[in-house]
Length: 133
Image (tube, rainbow, N blue to C red; front, side, top):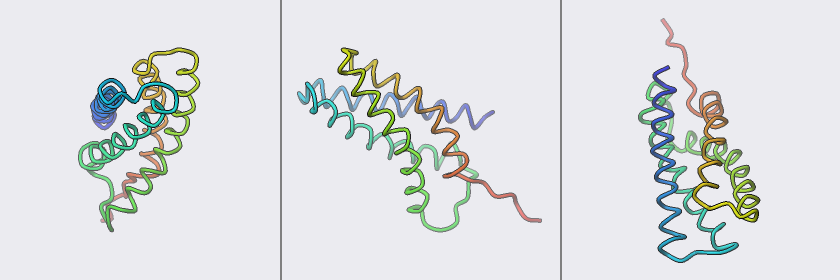
């Protein structure tokens, strides 16, 4: 149960990070309208994925295997995140075209993606091995 609570907390932190980046890119940097908002979404998404990886690896799944380099685990994390990110991008584009505000739109994608991500991270990325006697 503690791991799920840490995942929710790290996910909330990553979501705020993602939305803040999205607001900076669209609201302050002027990447408004059509494909510019989609591009801003992708940049914010990738940076938040890297941020989430750090939180998950060093805090949420702190007991997960640490053998080998960090890169294979980061690649698996990106693979798992890609599955939900692709779905989130499609959803974002469809809902943007339907007139939904970008921050509410992204928040909906984050919530739906979090459920799928937890199970993918648990089974594919941060596996724990039983300790041998």
